[in-house]
Image 1 (tube, each protein chain N blue to C red):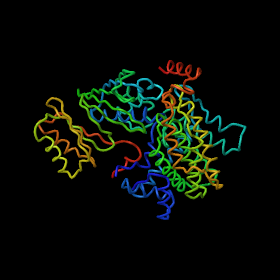
Image 2: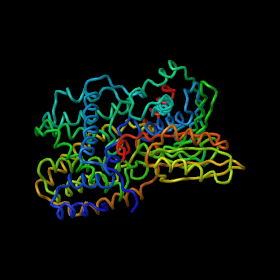
Image 3: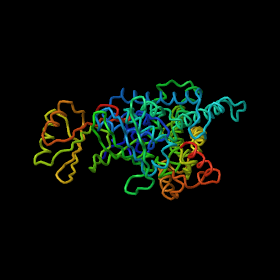
Length: 290
Length: 231
């Protein structure tokens, strides 16, 4: 069973009268010879790791070995000023929490990569809390996100070294936008619109980590990716259309990734990594860490 | 049809951060080395190449590889304390760094292990991203396998009929051979056999008992996510 485009998945849903989550259950069962139960068990393991990584970042001391990240998640979670209410503040804190846990060699679920692992947990935990959605339904939202990731991986790339941060936090934001849209009752077309919006907002985002470490700006970009997902889903659920179909947007990310200089793709040679301050931090880290 | 990716390749692996290539993949290379030694290691000499050499500290690549050598999987939280745990386990280690070595993939490690009982093994592996690895050299023989399935590694005198004897021993147990690679150096052959199922100890012993076989090891898969299930 093979899906090459998002539109193939939508077509399958229409033909089989199934939603996108069930299409992905069929995909995994058939290709990997698993039972439905095994697929959901695997998803539950992923979700539990996601929830734990959020909790750890919000409750434990998390200072990265380089010192660049220092208990930011708790600082945001407890901030007295809220730009748009407690929900957005908490969602922001959750994404940072996972980024900090990851940088401190904690356990995370790559979704789709380790560097972008904060977006999906932040969005899903926030959806559970804000909309009182039970865990079982969240597993279906994970399935929907995997459909987006599957096609993105095929027609573009998750690798920062190939598609920059667009391939990492960009794809994660698109996966998360699809999850939100699905959970709030959006149909397949609206899910794809949300994906389109999220990817368009990430188009050309470079991967320029200071010192080559998965910390700065990765962690705060995860937080912004959460906002991207909620905003993109909001637009799609209201019924506005992305004009460029999501599949074509994915092909555009591939083209843009290919056009990006290798200096802007994970090599820590351009962008923020190459600023005066970025270089100074790099020197200092590698001296102190050694 | 080529093999389709699993959705657990996208939602996963479950791993110790911060980097699937510099941490998760690195621990898997260490774990493969441990399985090839097939004994408690007392000493490890680890050479990191290219990007591994340049950024290992910030990514915990050293801790991940030592953790793998201690038998910790890529999602084992003990990886963080692996240097202290190694000291307790009586494992000594030494790191060497080669910044630019174009023949190797950007994230490559060479691991030489010494067992408490005198055995040694030397492995070169590359971390390809997403926690996936490629083992590319064992005891100086070029190999190419990803350790995502049950893999038997054999080094033997290159006698006529050797492949037939070995595949016969495996077939007898109703285990399917998915792939088989053979390389030769002078009069020695190296075989890497990927199997659909695990192989029992008796079959491994049977292979070891062929007079011309010098080395037999089973490498078991260990990536979180899709390949955690028995097919």
